[in-house]
Amino acid sequence: YGKSKNSNESHAFIFVTLNGERQHYYRFSLDEFSYASSKGSDEFFIEVGGNRFTHSGVSLNLYPRHVNNCGFRDDANLILKGELQFSNPHPWPVSLFELGCMGHVGWIPNLECTHGVLSFDHVLHGSITFTNFNEDATNSSQPLANTTVSMDEGRGYTEKDFGRSFPSLWIWIQTNSFRNNPGTSLFVSLARIPTPIFGLEFPGFTAAVWHDKELIPFATWSGAKFENLSISSEKVFMAMRSSKNRRYFEYRVELTVSRDAPEVLLYAPVNFTKMEPFVHEALLARVHMRLFNGHGDIIFDDIGVNTGLEVHGD
Image 1 (cartoon, rainbow, N blue to C red):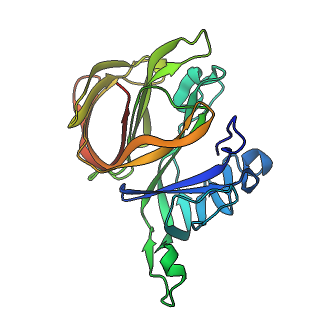
Image 2 (cartoon, one colour):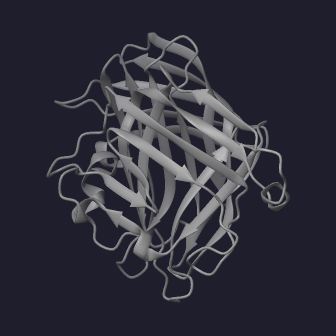
């Protein structure tokens, strides 16, 4: 959902990417958008043009329109239909003192961008049917070719972002596709965070490992520290140490993310004026994660495939 200072740019949208190689952007009018507070029964509910997204699943009936209700042509050539159900979700808990992954920082008013992890990992049930669509196909007597993919026993992850613009610099990493540890999930978000206080910015990060039904946070607000961070055209390496307190044990994590993966261009908000495709995102990167306990013993060493990676800014 993007509400712009320019009323002609305001619209709702659904963004789809397949295999991390092709993006599809579907626009909808604001009248086709509704969310949780207008339904009252589910704390997370979004409906866009008859497509529904909730804690318990997704219902899709997506097709590109030559001229949609916003007066624009969809940047998409894919028809998507299907129903998915989610079971056994694991959200980042939200409390009065910790707003999920944002901690107490999330309560600062008018932040440029706010994160939320709705589920580190959950099991999928259902199927999705894909149909490639183009103008010539609509005038042909040949039926469109459909591909139905079963998602049964697949794994999913859900997060949300809301605000008026993205930061000027950030790194984002996510995977719950570790080869030997199904159910383990990694989330990392590092950014230069602007504040409404005289335009001041500060570096901050929030990250977590979900492993063996335990949430291990690595975040500025939780007292975690960066020990190392290096970025090259080939890889991203970082090492973080969590802070031991009455709620959490001490851990150290090392991440090496390869960047030899295809990227797509994501649409993102630009200062509350429009949505533009400028964010490079890979969905097929690989991350080598090593997790150590407070004594320095390795308790996790595995490769995460199908890793989401964004590196933006200098």
